[in-house]
Length: 254
Ligand SMILES: *[C@@H]1O[C@H](CO)[C@@H](O)[C@H](O)[C@H]1NC(C)=O
Ligand SMILES: *[C@@H]1O[C@H](CO)[C@@H](O)[C@H](O)[C@H]1NC(C)=O
Image (cartoon, rainbow, N blue to C red):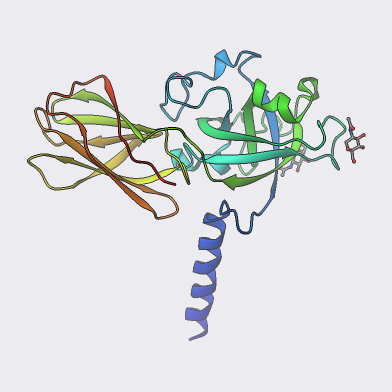
């Protein structure tokens, strides 16, 4: 009996930590931040989540790379974080400011460097390597590394979820982007006009894979966010859809 109780408590606290972004009780967690990619954020294009060009993907320069502890093998791609400089811990803050960034990249460990000098993304450190324009909103650039506090926050996006289809017959790779709400996709399905719903698997970042033959069929997609909510986008791509094209749905999370 006791064990069951412990498991239930453990399960509930896991749920609570996953839902840390809900506006109701925002929990602030300590981390550190550095800035990368140059003052025009050109070095932040591309990235491990697979979004490619940040402007066409809808994210602009308000982006961040996450250390292993936060990145979750791509599970956090698309999630939004509000980050504020910890003025009690450094004199480099622009006091009273915060910035909201989308996770678009992975900050890899660097085991050759001490974790406070170049190895700041080494596990188990929670670290945001933010685009320079985003970082400069909350701290002075010359600070190098600054202590911050962060919380998950709902993502606001304009327009519907986008589905970029690449690959070839029997191998579709679908990039899911411009996701509002929780922002991070936990599961995805595709349906051709002549198939049932087919579960896709995460290939890398926010690229989801199907090995079905879907050529010549209109495509519908179903997306589940990491807070459990589900959105269905019917007939997003017409029957003559092409590999290499991106199709924007009219639906999104709220
Ligand atoms: C932030 O970096 C400093 C300096 O390396 C370190 O002492 C501190 O523990 C780090 N904070 C977190 C939350 O990792
Ligand atoms: C920011 O706040 C800290 C702590 O309250 C203070 O020491 C520091 O001088 C402030 N910085 C600026 C630029 O106002």
